[in-house]
Each structure stands twice: as structure tokens, then as C-alpha cells.
Length: 272
Image (cartoon, rainbow, N blue to C red; front, side, top):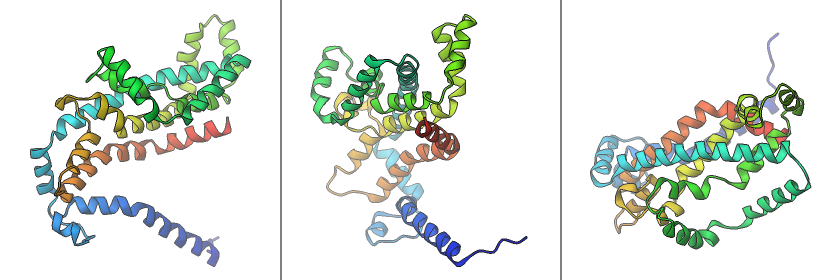
């Protein structure tokens, strides 16, 4: 039987299409602006142009884009793996070994989310400078390697993890870390994928802390390069949009390829 679309259904689809276009417009405008000259952008031209290669060449000649992209990728990958390992173990431990003390610690940890990073930035800077971690990978990733949100996210997801499996593995002689590494991690793969996207995005978009901790020119990340482009009196918007396009592309690719796992992981945490 052929499906008959009701007028209300057609209106819903039209509404959703308009809504999608509204949300997608900034990205579409960014891509279009990256192909236009500065004058065309200031004139409000929304159509694609022919200046993308010129903007890209100007960008590569005037800014350390390649080294900044390499630094951003390195910091994001190392930080993401470290965050997944630490936060997943913490969330797993808070739920599997749940007791009153851990519940109070979790409450304190969640309260720490209310403290803005600017309030702890100066003490962190003094501590890291005394430890000799300026302009280092550890100096960049350590403040974000363990976040209350990711620990809570893994804890909520672990609520749906069958505890009977843990008890059976203990009876079979599997150690506690073996249960985490060989049983918990494969079963909770969608949760790890969702957390990886969130953690990668945090490190990829991080601006304030790298601005403070990275004082050597060759250690800059892409957000710092983008900020440098907008710091002049005359801004080349074509070059700026080309830089933003390059900076945004990895996150778009990661989200498109991993969106199913991301949704499954988020739903698992919500159900937990």
C-alpha cells in the first residue's frame, strides 16, 4: 500500500527543512566565504567564488598553519586517549565500587563543574611554570585530562553495565583491571566513541589555556593562529574563512563518520 502523506506531515517536513537550513547556514556561509575575496565578503556576497586557492596560499605564506595543525592534532589525540583512559576508569570505579563515600566524592566532583576555568587559571599557571611544563604536551593536556563531565558520563553509562558479568569474571579469576580492559571496554565501545568525540572537541577548540601555557612560536595551535589573524587593524576575511574552514573540517569528518556511535553512546548514558 502506498503511504498517504497528511497535510500535517508535509508541514512538519517543511518546518524541519527550514530549521535545518537555518542551523546549517553559518557553515554554508563559512564555506562560501572561504572561496571569496575580502571585498566580496564585505559586500555580502553569499555565492561561492574563485579565490579559495588564493586565500589558502596567502594563509600558508603568512601564518604557521601546517605546524599549528600538527600541534592541534597531536594535543587532541594524546589528550583524548589520556582522558578516555582516566575518566572511564574513574566512572567505572565510582559505579562498580559504589558506596556512600564515593557518592559524596561524586557530588563534590559535580560541584567542581560550577567553578569557571578563569578562577583556577592563575594558580595552574604558577604551578605548571614551577614544574617546568611550559611549552610542553603535558602542560597543555593535563588541566583537561580529567573532567567532571566525562567521569559523570562514564558513570551513568556504567549503570547499564551488567554487574553479574563482573561477579562471574571475578569467580573465574580475572583481575579487576582485566575486567575493565577485556570486558568493560569492548562492551561499552559506543560510550567510548561518544566520549572521544567530546574530549577531542574540547582539546581541539581549547584556546585560553594554550594561550597562557604556550609561549613559543612553534608550539602554537590553530585557535591561536585564528586569533592572530583577527588581531590586525585590517582583517583579510577571505584568508580568515579559509583558516576557519581548514580548522573545522577535521571535527566535521569525525562527527559524520562517528555520529551513530555518538548517538548510541549518549542514549546509553541517558538510560543509565
